[in-house]
Length: 67
Image (cartoon, rainbow, N blue to C red; front, side, top):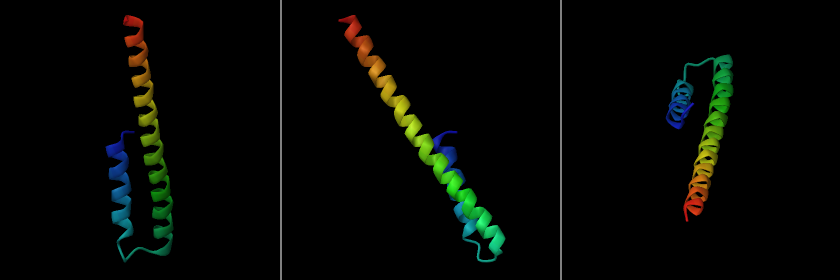
């Protein structure tokens, strides 16, 4: 999943949680889903940072090989 999709999911769930008419069970389910979505967002950001770092290192190695 990309970062934008993760952010959209988190914001959507937060919007649902803002509804004062939710029953307790619904609120608990949404909180659980929000926790899961926030974790997925964090993991996606960390993974993309890792991929970016790997790509930078590969480019640096290629440049050294060309010299």
